[in-house]
Length: 330
Ligand SMILES: NC(=O)c1ccc[n+]([C@@H]2O[C@H](COP(=O)([O-])OP(=O)(O)OC[C@H]3O[C@@H](n4cnc5c(N)ncnc54)[C@H](OP(=O)(O)O)[C@@H]3O)[C@@H](O)[C@H]2O)c1
Image 1 (cartoon, helix red, strand yellow):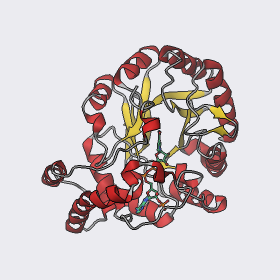
Image 2: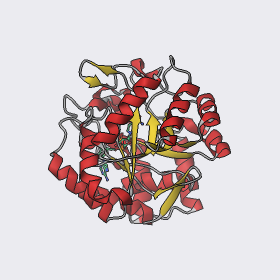
Image 3: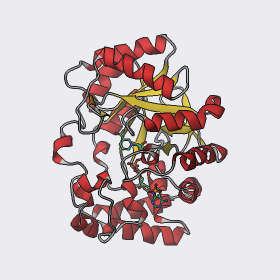
């Protein structure tokens, strides 16, 4: 498996595995024993970078990842996240943010236990907390690093100014933010800032939450508890309009003897050598398909063709529901 470097020192497999969907988000979560097998199969195939968060479940995803990877703990890099408020049922994406230093410490201790580890390889702030100066957040993580409880610091969906201020207190190893062929907003300010500061990017939802694989169209029914229902970009009308992008991916895929999912991932990988996408799946055959993206070589001509064709496609539907928009890019 090819390796990539995040920040100055964190070496990981060029594709990571997003674990969220194994416990949360896409309707009824799959069987835990099956997911344990899948995580171990990923390790067998050379994946060393695993992404979880306190809020996934909540709590159960960290527990699953910790249990599954315990036998190979020294061979893998585990990333997790704090910073979503604990409501009545634990943290939920809608319950607000909380990065008070005492809360960061509490969450870190609990994550260490669930992950069955002495140190978290990469600890991200999940969303910027407007009530806590980012210097205090970075300072708290710095102390946790000094104490040996955390190895690297990350941010998620933070704005350029926040990234700079955090980095001045504790070097940031990676920013984890949404990035894919249908979500390129970060190209204007964020990615140049990361390049300047030597911070890696971990693009999440690199498959557009499944849409860019071509397996979803306007008639696909999403389960009642599938959170994509809340996203304007997944309304049936938007799905219908956005098929134009899938058609483009399918054309390139046909020409290259690949699949649309592989082209979507190969495109992200081709943007910068310091991007490490973390596609999520709950199925072994899709994990293998996604890893196959590493063997797809997009030439300069292919990339130009994608660029030109994509420029003519107007993506329909906001990526976020209105009530969450203010939490992104602060
Ligand atoms: N920092 C943040 O705020 C944040 C937000 C969202 C996600 N994340 C992280 O990023 C990871 C990935 O993001 P994501 O789950 O939002 O989106 P994604 O990786 O773009 O898409 C995952 C979806 O695509 C499907 N899929 C995967 N491979 C496929 C293939 N080859 N063919 C067809 N369908 C395929 C999966 O379904 P199956 O399971 O059925 O294959 C799942 O529904 C998450 O697991 C999480 O760790 C972070």
